[in-house]
Image (cartoon, rainbow, N blue to C red; front, top):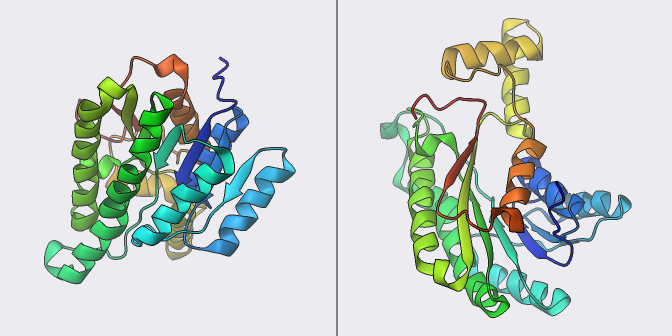
Length: 266
């Protein structure tokens, strides 16, 4: 299926590695001009250089999602360079601590909401006027299975993703009349540097292979995940690229899981 994204300009936050890198690769492969952003300028430029070697049009702009001046510079530079914005993929986020709720400080709660939620809201507010000017566009927010199936040791992270799902639905209701389609993609257990590090730790601790470590982790922590392996960033990216295309012109306000069946509810 041809997605016909040539001529479209997409911003992908958290685009230097992991899921964001896979999303950027999928969009660029379909012909989109992609602006990737993250805090680490060196990692970001290395990723952009790799894409350029493949003949893909990628621009790297370092930005911190918690600094509104950085976000304004990201949007302004993108528009100055390419003239418009068609697609926003809000992927940046992370987690800084694990444990029961009584071990998570209020500062950690505030910080994770700044990174995972408030920064996303601020960037979206800056991009919407440009999408309106274009006569429409796409906003694709990257959530997590934790929004629907909370992990007891990731309470503050769970809450940011639940808020994101709600915000995405509200956005879709606000801006559908402007032909701005908003959808959410919820990946889980994707082969990212963080997941690789976790599985290598289990592998060393248990003296088993990384593949066996993945199966053990799933058995103990994600019993409904039926595929028995981590997903790839590109498997998330392919869905994002589809949602960014005209083939998804009647889809908005939806949540799509890319989790190997990990969420146990309907």
